[in-house]
Length: 323
Image (tube, rainbow, N blue to C red; front, top):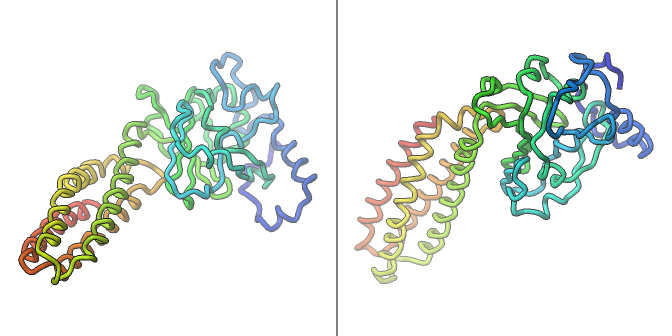
């Protein structure tokens, strides 16, 4: 890979797949050789701490495959932190081979478990290598980021992401939120959004899923209630919805209060995700309330209508924040 050639996005898959395995290996060997960067010619000899790639002069085979993953097949949300080996319970998914094609399209295979146990990394000693492998990496950013941690994050199977998340509030990196490299549709970003806040945003997303599931479960109960059932059956459903109200009130309050934090996360479109979750949950409740009003015994329909109004107002108030 010549030093004068800029970072190239992935070649079309059809062209890659036409090449024999020997070509893949040859390309990989060239790609993984350490070399000078367009921005830097020498690593910092004083750099300390573990490096993302280890010592590339002794271990030239360690590549971007150590920290970039291809679209995952699981739809579950996984937050994998470089400092936390127990950030996921889905160990099987972490052992599934994945393929990336950095640079000129050379495929490289690795497992997500390869990145889950990485130590804290130092970019200082790897400036030449990062400058060559990453797109849109300014020298000023690298100088500002002597130490970051790698966080791998995916919201779902269609939006894999790698986050470079700074946890030290006193570093100038906290002012930067637009580092980006694109490899086969993946995004690499630096963000000023702190880990705790990121977890809060993730928590809102997960809470919405739980709320929706609770409503759908109650909907199944409502479907068995009709005007021929006893008043006790209808009352039981209304009471179940009443019991859910505190949880929904807390969830909606959190979603409203944290919107300004969530929208600071670059790249993940978490605002869009939470907004969709809110709308899905709202739609699930309206369907539930309408079914209850239609099928419940006459003497509880009034309470069901009142409950629908209360939920409706609360949801619309929160949805207006995300409009």
